[in-house]
Image (spheres, rainbow, N blue to C red):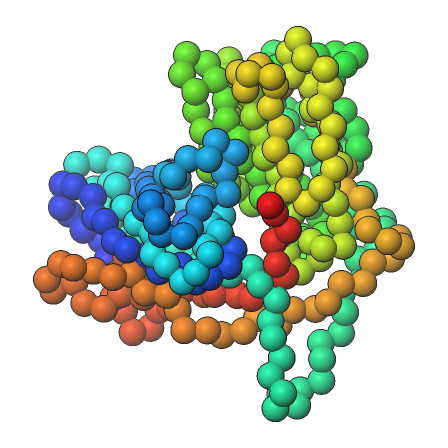
Length: 316
């Protein structure tokens, strides 16, 4: 890990973040700024060969606070822009970023280590999946895999959700993003399971959702999702990457049902993937006396960006 220096400059700082070829998660891991932590704005330049895997197909993504993440697909080794924006004038610019490359590890011919044992995901672990939702005028509701939140029988506005994976978490993650609309549209960055996206008590129902499976067990599962948007028929999707919205993209979400389906037998074996150390991507800096930086916003010989090789994301 690498932690940046804190800056007292009045403005933000912009850096070029090197992204390896493939699909990576750019995760805002931590900040010493505490409640005054800066936000991170990622921008994909035209012609960079990179894109944000985002429902709205924007070229810019804001990671508002530590814990937020986004997914980038790069056709080649490239760079994207990373701007650190302080929460207030003269605020901290301290940020820690992790880059996690989602690709299978390759065993070299001279690697004499025995292959890692396969991971066995039992069918009863699938039952650990839970979805917490904040429903307008009802508060937080927790349901199990395959159970409706609101839905055709009791349609009510869903303002936010959180995915909980239980025993599945070490080998599988569900990345979630979406948007909501009140007076103005609000977009939520891609977040991992265990992170609440949306709002509570602001009369801002979700209007779009996207789900993606990642992790070394991702290829062994599919998502099965049913969504009901106001004044629209139920939308049903099955796959590793799912996007949901009403006919115009502005209809409130009034019902959601999510489940995992194992591909093949109930006891599913998936390859075990070893983390492989690779040289950390560097942030290119043009300012004087900035020093060499590696992976986040500042220099430091003790730090590094952790880059893990895991099973490939199944997307478009």
